[in-house]
Image 1 (spheres, rainbow, N blue to C red):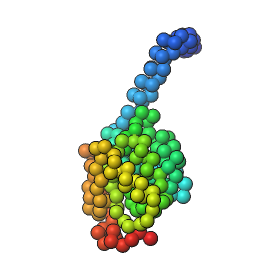
Image 2: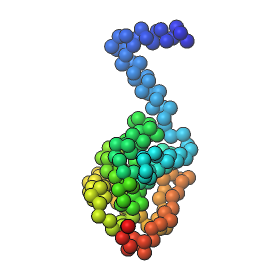
Image 3: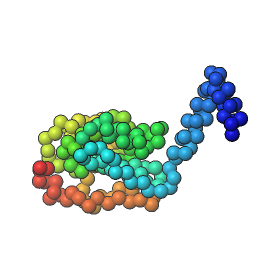
Image 4: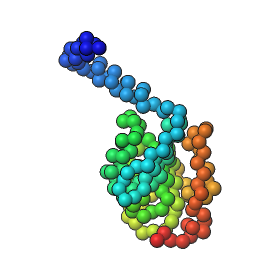
Length: 175
């Protein structure tokens, strides 16, 4: 083992060798972080707020809320996602209070997002308006109203069913 380490160090001392070692390390870390066929649920510590990342067995993701701080939300996502993943299958905003929506705008800016689910509750918040504008501008993304009974297929083995809000809930302003 020591002999192999010595050879790698000598190889890395040359420009072409350094590039080869770097490529091998990046390739290995990519292979080790491919989807593992299991469901992962990450409760992200984003301060006094909520953010949950669901990763399906096939690697599809659902980010539920984003906490109040965009930088912290991005750091927490980076801690649980492979370095090379810059996509989110779906983003779900449960309601537009700052402690749920504040971190989502940067998540949309930095990741390709396929689907944005919005509960559509009326509440004056600039972060909410910014999120909706980014969602509308996201190439190839769809925006759907999050309603009770909606089924989201993240994986052939994983179906997510929304239990709320009902239509009556949405008619009441978020307080």
